Image (cartoon, rainbow over all chains, first blue to last red):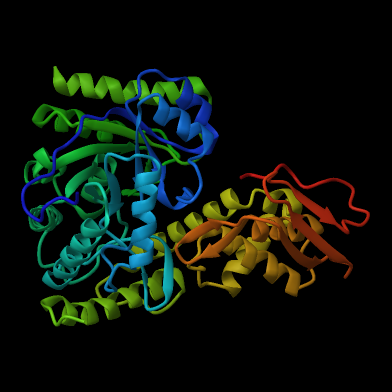
Amino acid sequence: MSPPASGPATIAALGLGIAWRREIALFIDRRRDLGFVEVMAEDIDPQAPPPVPIARLIERGLAVVPHGVSLSLGGAERVDPARLARFAAVARAVKAPLVSEHIAFVRGEGMESGHLLPVPRTRDALAVLVENVREAQAALPVPLALENIASLVDPPGAEMDEASFLAELLDRTGALLLLDVANVHANAVNHGFDPLDHLDRLPLDRIAYVHVAGGWEHHGVYHDTHVHPIQPPVLDLLAALCRRVDPPGVLWEHDDCFGSDAEMDGEVRRIQAALARGRS
Amino acid sequence: MNETAGDAARVRLGADQARLIAALAADGPLPEGIDPERAELARISLRQKRRRSLRRAWPQWDHALGDRADALLDAYFADCPRIPAAGPLADGLAAVAWLGDRGAAPDALRIEALRVRLRQRLTDRGAERRRGLRVAIGRRSDGGLLVAIAWPFVGRVTILGRGRRPAPPPAPHG
């Protein structure tokens, strides 16, 4: 069932999605325009039936995509087989059509970072990442999509730019791309590159779905907070992406300070408007 | 283990990554080539992420500690920069234990810690639900005994020995 190391996996149409959080379970449940949700893989107990709100969405035919943050695929250590087995079990428990994880590391030599850290864009790191991703793919029952992260620091010693690194990783593993347009914007601002040129150099036909999230810019640094409104340049980038390709899915990620249903609905509408703008 | 091109690469990469985590998550020295101002922003961001994750997993922290919640969390982070591999629930358990060592853990948090321990086993790979009849024992802040019993099938937890607590803890978040 795992995708071959070469040749893209079949990409399912997902539609509009929202990252599922307990605080907004009702808001998500009430919507009739969603095709999928993402759940934090680490929050799902694969031994138990899925939480009732998630089970309802599965019954209604929504796709549920487990989104991992702890595999540390970009880490120097081999991916923990037990952690992978758990991730695979979560995928089966929610009948996931695919799973996603980050191009990042979160631990090393017994220390946890607590959040996603950027992998240095070196040949060494790419070789390790490719091995780790292949091991993960072999253990997972469904295709794996890899997400580009936002970073405040750029690890030293880069031997290639982010687009080349990402394109080669996808090419060598056959993995799908979870393209986070807010993270592209973040890194374009924080590390000084042209986001449109970046898009043009990615294999956009490998996109499984797209992330859109809020953030804020302060003193010339963009912070990917997931608690602020979506910034206009991120929506512009989403529209620019949709002029180039029709992504199979687009998902809004928001983690805290949810606001009223009307405010959240407003954010979803802004995403839909950007999609329409790009597709027209 | 197979000798692959990756093995030598893993050793070099591992050293670099450990230095970066130590610098950003545990106030270690900054590796050469990283902008100090950006590193400071990344440190703050990781700290905020840890704080938010712990609070989401432990809403009782703010409830039980009120005005002191922020300062005590800062002090805990300063004393214990290493984040438990088992995640935010385990970070909260460690924070309550840290408070307990200083004689500052309110009973509401002590009881919640018992509930967390009864409800799940925290492993480095995440939380695993515990089943069957389970018992956990702890101490109230006045030294009295606390006994928590989780009953099979019904999913309820009984707490014995609450003493003269004025109010029950807020609704469980699970």
